[in-house]
Length: 262
Image 1 (cartoon, rainbow, N blue to C red):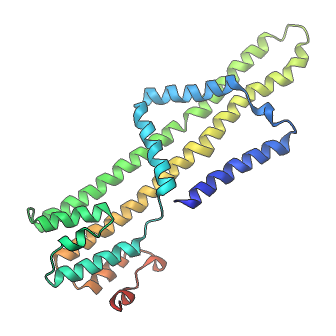
Image 2: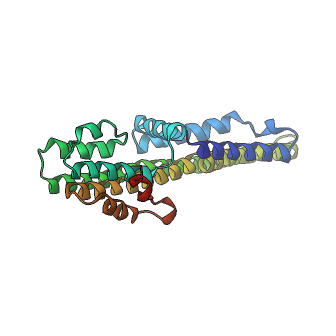
Image 3: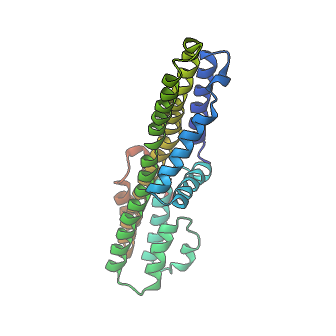
């Protein structure tokens, strides 16, 4: 479970609720159903026009799955697995026994292609590199769609505010018009509040979360591609570890001495 993402979301909601409570003793004044309808309904309608609505639903499912089940990429673990498999392959062992123990689908995919022996080694590395790049492109496209969707709520918030102003101004000539200005203005502005909150507390953070996750997966896959390249050459496992450590900052690197000692 990605505890930090969930905690961050709860903090954002908590700050908003506490802010409302500190601003007034009657937080229910921030509830306005016509404003909700304009902002949420308008956002969904614009999203349906821009993209396939069912695809957006899939994107949110991906995000919540990553938020609930996801975790930070363990690059050192990936390098350790590649190092051990490389050592075994260099000694002439078959890859079958190791493939079944691999949890990462991208690494397993590459090892299966090597084990099948259908494609040339250079062709396999080129295919895996292409898949790595295409996977990043697809993931970034998903995040980009959410960022585009984040533009709609503030826009419909302004539309709702403008609509409310039109209604307000048209009633200025009536009885007790001055007494109605304050409450009517507050209702007008609530739509802008809803649009801003939906965009900046949910949609934009979700898009940034997907982007960050995509970059981590991309780096992990680049490590795997380079690892497979070294594996097929039957490179010394220590050299494999050092080469793959080059992708990481010092604090994230694998201490191959601990692996050798096991």
